[in-house]
Image 1 (cartoon, rainbow, N blue to C red):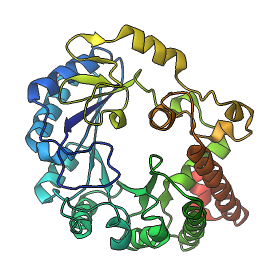
Image 2 (image 1 turned 180 degrees about the vertical axis):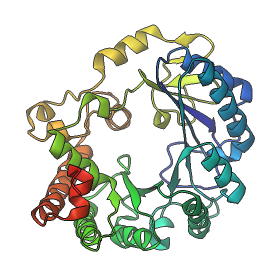
Image 3 (image 1 turned 90 degrees about the vertical axis):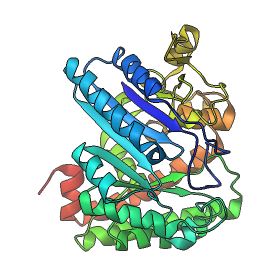
Image 4 (image 1 turned 120 degrees about the vertical axis):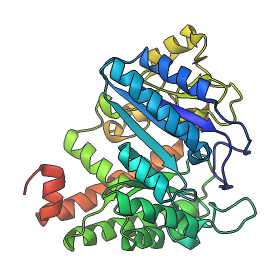
Length: 363
């Protein structure tokens, strides 16, 4: 079971694309966190992951530490090895926190939207002032403790003009594991979509150059689509287990199938609560519909096995139905597959050593 604790609705930043707005000073209690761990472990067999999310989870530092200790104790009783993760904007990170996270073997994702021009389009403090330097400072502290960690950038209509230079900046700063998350929820016009394509093509060539220079990087849309080429598509284990083997708990104790659907905990997508258990009817609906998109064009598309049209939380946000996707997803998936296939084809034809080692296990 993958348990995500949505520990606070509050955050120091005021990102325009945040799906947890407006910010509220509503926080999870330790009692709720412990009850959530107990509930999730009662549905766990041999795997358990505890993730901290928000809002900004580091605002709840004391709760994070105590909930982690509690989860370790309860996992030990069941002989289940725990995995811990946290997603943070980085502005509250310091040496003490990073040392503790490293000691506890946390996987860390830090959110920075590229260079300052890209980042400050959408990811500022509530008064509009820049948060870029503070986020980079936090990520640099993580960099000192972790050989590898994930850096997450959100691609939006507002910042897409600076996408290539933003990624180039991150790589020059030594951040070599970059996830580019599309903002599927905004309106994109034709010019912005064309620019997005051109920016991704430039990033594809940058990726090739990094491998040629023996400084390989991981960029999410390229690596993931190369892997789907090698595997002939996504396997079931690659897909999210929306509400089945993963769940998110709001400060109220309400259970959601994905942390991105918690929002301000209005209850629209609740599948139960930690006090009374799962809503059986909702769970049956989710189980019966989990794992595919029902769009007619998706069923007939030759790229369907490599397409993330199965992401239920994105589908719900776009169409209101977990199994019906939208055109922006189709655009993104076709674009990323085409660029990744080009990149993979170039590096494979050159038998680039770093590329062959990563994707074919050849050294």
